[in-house]
Image 1: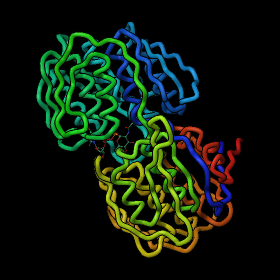
Image 2: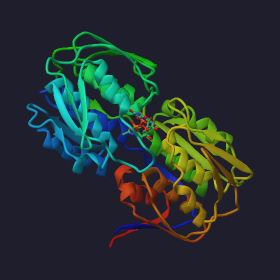
Image 3: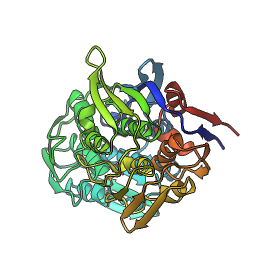
Length: 428
Ligand code: UD1
């Protein structure tokens, strides 16, 4: 199995280009199921999760073609005919986002049978809000043998639904389903993540009538059919935050190019309070960049709680903890989105971090320096936290099970090498 080896303690410097957001690209790819006309997506990151979703869509009858460009991948997806409304366990278990096919299939074909999802082992990750929403739209739901069957033989009917919690996936799934329902749908207490705004933009380009993404109420006026469209995937705010924290941990100065600082409005001031300099700049032709630097003094401990957007993202919690491991003072990190997202704590401990977990809160007592050791990646974001920690550590760290990283970080080794990190991927 592949592993990544990092000789830590080298300051990072130079420029690093930010990829398209995985969490935006996945629902955008699924949106193709809503129309019999082609959808062209650009700035798509080249990742294992994108390939997995491509396989899932292909077995529903979607033709997927991929070409490499200097700006991520370009995908053309064409769902002229849906050949199957069954999403099998073998494929869906690999990635929770694949459950998103249920809404579009149900809306377009009047039925679907989709395996209950898998994905990162970070908690129960139920889909009850998705199913309750489908019921409100008039579908009948049946759960048996690990599969959900949803039926609406006469089509979905617009309705109101208030989500008990602002779930990202349920918001996207119900939004897509409602674009082909009869009449108006009002979704309340929805998630406000930038990836939802990106999905709304693409659906509107496909002819859907939607407004409100980015606020907590989304209104959708159903259409009888949607058309094709072209859409560029927004920059990855989680990748941006991860590399900013890597610079914080290792020191140096790196310009993160092609990102969108507005979508990091909680993250930037937090890092600044910790003593990491963050400056938003323009690098020609409207391209935004963030210059990140930490020189001299060790950074400070600050507290954070993960929350739905615009709060601090749970997908950066592990990386932030890796940064806090070497802070001056103490940091309290509270995880409010997932109940089992501290699996990186024992691995950071192997590098010498001093972290104690009590319920939802981890208390990090900063140490002078971490020391390299063999560690094991347990899930996608935890893996990236080990990379952040290793870059600032003394000596060599070997990160095992890096297939988790391949799910979500495009060209991570070459990107880090590009800013001077001593990192290599070993195969066998
Ligand atoms: C998405 C992101 C993931 C991120 C998460 C939270 C993608 C592909 N993935 O995941 O990287 O960590 O948002 O920002 O975009 N819940 C229920 N019932 C439901 C749905 C969710 O109880 O029907 C709970 C989950 O168990 C979890 C919480 O709500 O505790 C948040 O889940 P959700 O926002 O749905 O996350 P995902 O869309 O799966």
